[in-house]
Image (cartoon, rainbow, N blue to C red; front, side):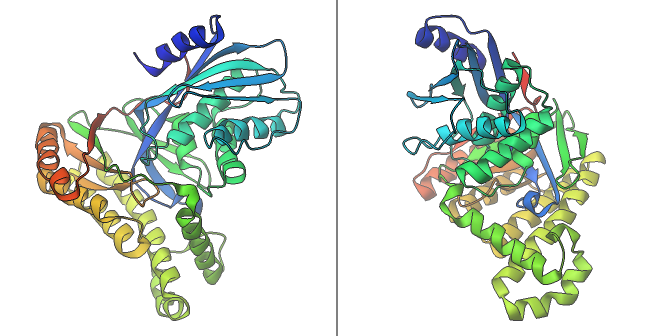
Length: 385
């Protein structure tokens, strides 16, 4: 049973009536362009065929009564009173934060509802379960009260909720791809202008995700610290963001910045070179050049390992195994914020089983952890079911 059907079924069980509205928003995997979004750069994600469903119906009062099925937990709050965090359950911040900032845009939104949330995006795996929840809730509210919000508006409200209500200083990529994803396409996103450039995935190419089962929590500090370091680097160059620093300019000033702060120089190097890799990867994909795309993905991973320092040994080992199985016909790299989570691999379809076997035969033996292996389909963004 898919999340949409399960949410409808559970709504009847929990609230003893039939839901009238169901929304669904996908998780995402980022092929290349890590930590470039909050530096106003370029990213290349796709929405995946795992996501979050929200099913519900209006109430006669101004209360939101929410049931999170995977966790077996409820949350209840009023829309005609200031919305404050519920410190008991972390997931409630994504729901309350989105509704708080929807009210900021649409002050008359006080329509209560009962709703059920279900999803099948692996949690704490770097596949944006939080963004898919934010976007699904945003779309539910927009449809519930016929609010004048576009899907891009909903994505940016989701980002704001995560930044200002939950406390993770993420960029806008996760919410944008969850809202705007296109079937069978990767989406190049210019995170400054919000322009999107759909790029078809060749029919003979598989998008593979492997979950390391090293869980990460981006609110815990590392992610926000990386962002602060990038902002310090932009300040050094006298620009709004690292998007505005060319590789030539960076090279010219590298020794000066390194002398000032070697760690910040490394962070800047990753972001500035990664932006260029995304543009090069778009070109490689359009030309069907998997060999070049694979090399760019490998360079991206090395840059995260050495310059951004946000990989872990288990992730590095998964990348090594996947790359060994794929050879030169594709690539693998860490995906997501880092410090655990998943790798993504681009591979010819006829090599998928080799990749699966290589990882199954070696990863658990080395690490004591059993991986999850997914072959994903690039999917449509948020929708009403």
